[in-house]
Length: 284
Ligand code: R1P
Ligand code: URA
Image 1 (cartoon, rainbow, N blue to C red):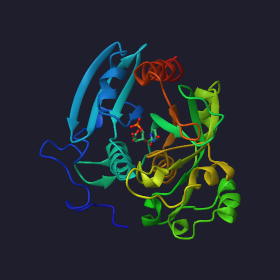
Image 2 (tube, rainbow, N blue to C red):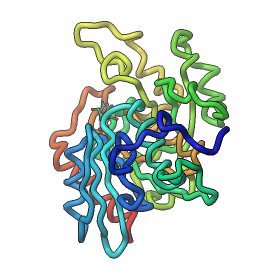
Image 3 (cartoon, rainbow, N blue to C red):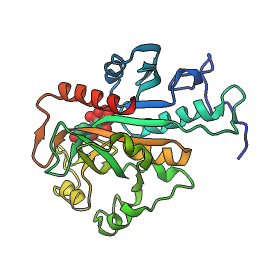
Image 4 (cartoon, rainbow, N blue to C red):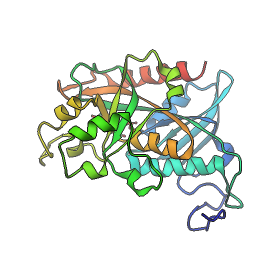
């Protein structure tokens, strides 16, 4: 691969910031909280002691400041793994590419990435309004099939693929897992589980409004294969972190138990609880 990137490949804004995130290297900390919802960014940074950077473009809102003396960033990713493809590549460019010269840096920097999101549960016993940390993830969104050098098999995938019955979507599956040492931050979480990441909220997650989903028993089948919960970003965060050499962990607040038909009675209170829970653990 050529070391110098063309203007069309690493696109920069007029001020030299990365194209979608609209950020300069000095705008981010080494610890970054990733949330889906742009409104959650200020809800998190309200707990910071100082906020020095507030920038945004499209659905990507970023606040950087300090908490208990440590520099920290919170950023919204919007919904879906296609956004995560942008977030991960541009965050990595901010630390591992010399943006002015468009050259790869010789020293690699690893970021610590903490997704703080919401999810639905496919395990009837997983109660709403609790934290669920993702150990393994299966991506049903296909993203990693566009990248070379991705290791598709892992411990979780072997058993899963043998028994996964849906031939039509099997070719786009991929697997990943957490950065194990990041598990230390969240070792007291109520649940540790296996997450499925979907490229949609409705039929991909078995929801049927006016359109039929693949199979009425889809969620039960996933749970039988060891999946506890689902959402729309973690597969890409974990897989791209591995390829790019960053560390990542997801904790999601369970707001829906799909097998019991339950939704959080107060998801705003539940979100506040999630924010406190994460901040207490990642900044000592
Ligand atoms: C769907 O409502 C969105 O909520 C979940 C899903 O992954 C998807 O992004 O995450 P966030 O709460 O982080 O947005
Ligand atoms: N996020 C999802 O993607 N699905 C749910 O059911 C809840 C949160």
